[in-house]
Image (cartoon, rainbow, N blue to C red; front, side, top):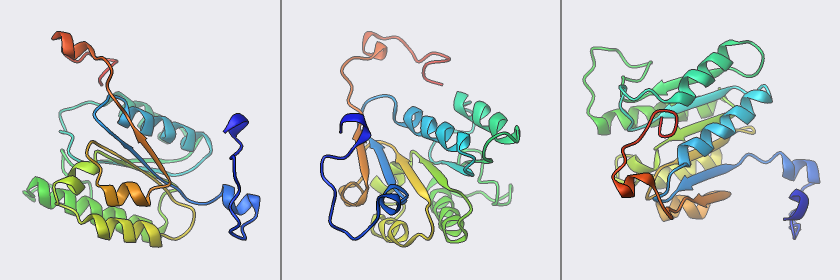
Length: 199
């Protein structure tokens, strides 16, 4: 793809503009580092375009202070780009009553139900479903249902899903799949994760 031009153009009856504005499903998977980081980079691009961004963090603990969260929340509140809504399963989804004691599996399902509601309402232009591949891999959320909901989503809503072990059915459906592979990592030499690099 030199200069961002495709090597072939499908005979699908779409104009260049229609093809360029197709909503995409992107998956960042694999054992290497950088899946979420790349997704949050897309969120920055979306914010710059004035798009409303919805981040749904599955699996990660509420105690983990993700550096991108502070940056994107601040940008979203600045009024200069798009809005940013940030939801964490680990601290309890913002739309679920705080006294509710959901199991991780129930919380993952409730997060997916909210994503479905937001997609139907076209709430966001970009959805970051961070670590969502894990609930799919573990069978907490049905992959076939996810694929069908994404296939039927209205408008021009883009969705990026991160996490290891993304199911093959999702990979087959996605428009872009990137597998992060590990060649070398400081943790291989016994070094623990560090501020500014891992979070």
